[in-house]
Every structure is written in C-alpha cells, then in structure tokens.
Image 1 (cartoon, one colour):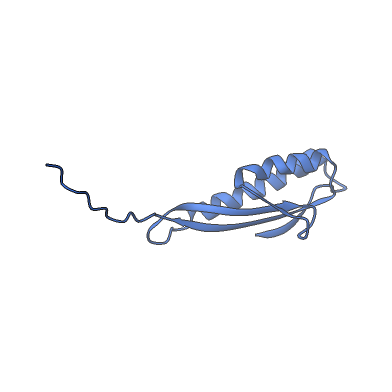
Image 2 (tube, rainbow, N blue to C red; image 1 turned 180 degrees about the vertical axis):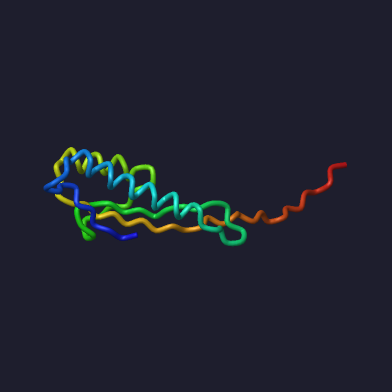
Length: 103
C-alpha cells in the first residue's frame, strides 16, 4: 500500500480524521496477515515508510506507524505519506551438525 492520507479535512475534526487513518492502516495489516503463507514461511512481516511526502519518507517498523501518525497530528501536518509492503518471513533451516561421539 502506498498512500497519501489527509490529516486535515474541512468537515471533520482532526482527531476523528486521525482515528479513521489509523483504522484504515490497522485493517490493512489485519487483511495482509490473513493471507495464506507460502510454504516454509513462519509469519508476515512488513516494510514500512512514513513521512510528509514519498521523498521525505523514513523507514519504520509496523509498530511505530501509529506513534508517527500521532507526532504528525501534533505537528499539524496537512497530509502524510504511508508505504507498507508485506513479506513472508521464511523458516530458517538448520544445517545438520556432526558431533564427535564422546567415549
């Protein structure tokens, strides 16, 4: 998902608009986590970027997105850019190790 969210809308209170943006992002995470995992995958992970625009976006973890939205609201941004991509984290295969028998 690549999207520019408006944080200041004429007919809505800023707090309500912020909550609707957070809700849409949470729904996206939930929808992506419901997708079937590929074989040998353990869970879904997310690559996230956040900023005033696509050029200024910085990399964040999925858990930091809502805190970044709160900071943007506190600084009275008009809009923010959010980019979220899901990726499957594969199960690590352990190489068999040969131990010397102890006598």
